[in-house]
Image: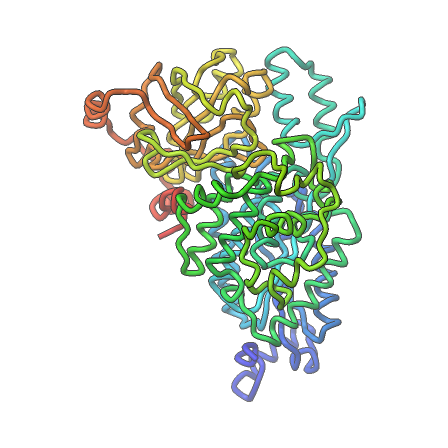
Length: 553
């Protein structure tokens, strides 16, 4: 066993003495040592139940003959971090999580790992660590939150909550109306109830083969989540026995499967950052062009919030991620020969799976659209690409042209939106919010929600070198590459410039003569960094383009 390095023979007697100090017995040390990476904390609603998940995982490990040993991973609540300097610290934690988990796994020589993530950067960070360490690993997330319910019976969620703020500034809601949303939007523990980033990544963990069936969709408050955790604890022992490792599972074909499921589900645009970063740790390079190729032949089968009025609990009731994969497999869109954490192939896992609700998971022959939920746009404004959640864009905004309204930060844009200075037809441009320029590539959920809440979601587009929450809807185009801080064309946009967007054609153009752009480029100088000390300053020096997943080099 790998753990023999810290527990076998006379040379490791000092190591064993420290295990004994922890209360472990000789009998426990004779079994495989399984690291249980628990992301429990008391600040993230999606993580407040993870102590219970960890206990269930450890029970499963013990039942299958292993010795579980728990250690922590950090997690940020993106919703609480939203709209202030805290959001600069969200994406950057992905690499802190990967690095710290690698350090713990290597320092203590575990035989296997069970990862217990749930929200946003915590999931890709642990997947990156799993790929990097490459010892038998399985994931069990904390599960999604249930949808809320307003006094009139309508279901609600976090994206509605953010849009309610915009409704308030537009005079559509009073303070009592806002308060009703804040008391109803997030009624339970768990990752927020729509197809936002956390749920997207937990679903894709299942799709790529690193989580058992139900990992992405069983609600956090259901007892089935605890049973899933116990089965994950049991299954890690089988993976250890057979020496099945993350890179045996996360192959190029598995990533293509995950991207296919991504398009069918209508996942968060943040997956376009995270999947390439995880693949990079596996020695696999995913580029944005592959995403469009997959999207072009993958029908969009689901419209969960914010694209529609259905939620993760509904997806679970319909059969979950495996039911979506079953529909995709009807047209041979998945490689079913890939190995998964069950020890079986994807094809074997899909045997007997049924789509129980054709109104929620559309049949493959009757999709919402013939192409996928995410589109990568290119043009002279984004030569390396930018991304939009196509499934959450109003039909009238699939093509749009309008004048640029240029802002140098999220705060400037928010102030203008709340003041009523943005009008139908405008194209809001927020720059110097990219991985380097932010630094940290903040989410623009506040401005996009304000635009939608004020009734402008069908007439105003927003373009940024920052990124978006999975809760964002509308013509919200992010990850513009190269970013402004790298001298990308978005840095050259001036107030009033016409910008043309054609999402169906995957094109975005700044309608300014090339000679004028050349003159602007010659006069451009990069602004001083916004932050010059601490972790963010180090991050800004190391981070690469969003088109590469914002990996560190």
